[in-house]
Amino acid sequence: MAQHLDAEVIVVGGGPAGASTACALAREGVDVLVLDRARFPRDKVCAEYLSPQASRILADMGVLEEIERSDPAHLAGMMVRAPNGKTAEGRFAANHGFRGFRDKGLAIRRTILDEIVLRGARSAGARVEESVRVTDLARNGSARVSGVNTIAPDGQPRTLRARYVVGADGLRSVIGRRLGLVKTSRIWPRRIALVTHYRNVQGVTDIGEMHVDYDGYFGIVDVGHGKMNVAVVIPMARAREIGESKTEFFERWIASRPHLAERFAGAERITPVRATGPFATASRRAWSPGAALVGDAADFFDPFTGEGIYAALRGGELLAPYLIEALGRTPADEGKLLSGYDEARKREFGGKWKLERIVGMAIAYPYFMNNAAKLLSQRKDMADLLVGVAGDFIPPSVVLSPRFLFTLFISPAFRT
Ligand SMILES: Cc1cc2nc3c(=O)[nH]c(=O)nc-3n(C[C@H](O)[C@H](O)[C@H](O)COP(=O)(O)OP(=O)(O)OC[C@H]3O[C@@H](n4cnc5c(N)ncnc54)[C@H](O)[C@@H]3O)c2cc1C
Image 1 (tube, rainbow, N blue to C red):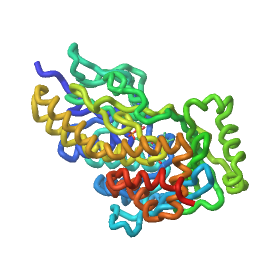
Image 2 (image 1 turned 90 degrees about the vertical axis):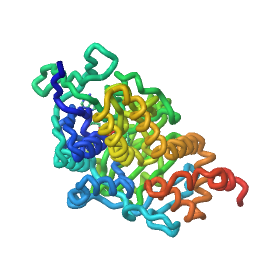
Image 3 (image 1 turned 180 degrees about the horizontal axis):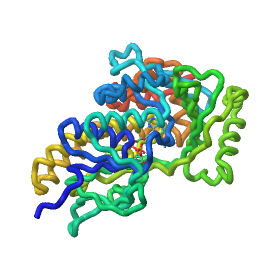
């Protein structure tokens, strides 16, 4: 007897990855149900920057106009300050022959962004249930996933059935862990982050800032409405230094660096300091019979890359056609089909994964970061290329050539 289904596809998590997946599926007529344990608007620990190319996906989802109406900040480029004090700046609009969907990135509170993006999935026809926590996968006696076990808003356990379950449930994905697909570190070292918001930090412009130091890195970005997102990221090995109070650690970090302290002299912290991590995780593969992973659940990008939200949105776009195809076939065809999703992810993100490892090395070994900043402060053309890659509109291969990397990290040591 055919089993009752609550949806063709259940998407666990209504963040950017879940909303993008649900939107793409619902538009093609798939009956999709999104479950999120939170009630939106909900916050998310994040530096809240979106690459210029993320706007292409938001426009396709039909939500970019509403995001613009919410008055976000716009970013013209990025700046990096190395431990030796050298700074380098790159812009999205530059003379390299590449052009993004637009010449600016977005910076916006996640409370605003995620609610609008999830509404986009609803408008496309997805059903969304909030305050529903997924506790486990349901398997129906076989290895194949057949649904999820949940705790409903009234506290009652409930099993929901579907042909496919998508784990879009973020960094510590229950779905990824239950599928046994999560492996530990691809990037190194494992890091933790502290994030808060301030008003009245001096000298904040439309250039996002990353200040790399010997013991971690620090980011500042204007997120609109007079608020600045401020983040500290440190290696897990230093977590003990945070001690009893995250706020005191954060304030100590700023006070101990004169170039930051003077800019924060008249600033006011307006949200609690929130912590997250460790966050160097990835999945071995992004699917299993009856299930697939997307966004942070599949693979977490180091915050330095500013890649996570774009990768989450893009991941949903990549996954949907494979699921639609699989829904029209028998489970026997599934392995070949969903391996195609893994291949598509490698084609899309492979270059970024390599770059992430290189950036991780440059942060861990300041010799390389100092060399790079020394060179980039004089080679704006190279800085613009790197910022274009981070902006998702220049292929990573452009900056991954041995020649580019040698010029960036090694050659400055031989220059006067
Ligand atoms: C410190 C820090 C700074 C960052 N800065 C940036 C940046 O500037 N730019 C950028 O692009 N990326 C950044 N990122 C990464 C970015 O935040 C993530 O990549 C992005 O949020 C991934 O989206 P997602 O939809 O996969 O997951 P999430 O946004 O985490 O959404 C997951 C959703 O799943 C829900 N959920 C989780 N578990 C369950 C469950 N059991 N049952 C039901 N629902 C569940 C959650 O409530 C949540 O709504 C940063 C990350 C960190 C940690």
